[in-house]
View 1: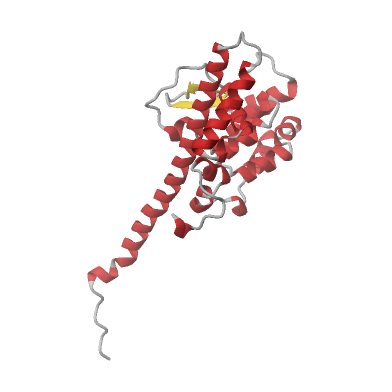
View 2 (view 1 turned 120 degrees about the vertical axis):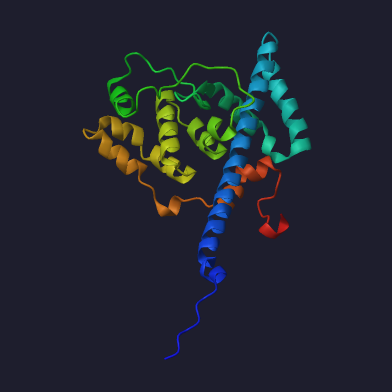
Length: 251
């Protein structure tokens, strides 16, 4: 029986080439989506900083802050679109006040929840988080904003996550959820679910805290956010002043 001719080397190697190129493009898309979100968060944090600094400069004038936000909202909406409403500016202001720029133990710049860990936190809280986190991961003193900092390190979560975290009233719980979201790579859906189901409180009350945390960190395939979904995030669209109903062919 005649033998089949061998495949050319180029054809035999093609599946490997396709896999390598596909991996590069998939990683590129993920990085692009993360970069957009990091730039958005960094921009909003700095907007909040400028607002707070200006408010502090005019703090002796009655109603100065109200008038400032009203005027700024009108000018920014006219220039940059609906993403700069009064409510959104107030969130940016709260973001700056609630998150401080510091350094991780490895020396990387990072914005984290402004939360001073008490020397003797309430019983449940002390056991909930402190015992589960590695030494040296507690919030760090504020340092000046480093313009050369890598945004992906400085702002590890999308803006939607920070908005959800701002709704958590307890600073210690907010820090806990932020830390878990960073470690677990949570989508905002997973973050919202864990906050809504009181993972922080449940962990503090559990005898086997590690098991509760492990279940909380377990991902759900339905929570995975694709790069396309990340770019279509309403907050990203507002930041770029794009309409919600845009199609990929419009870009």
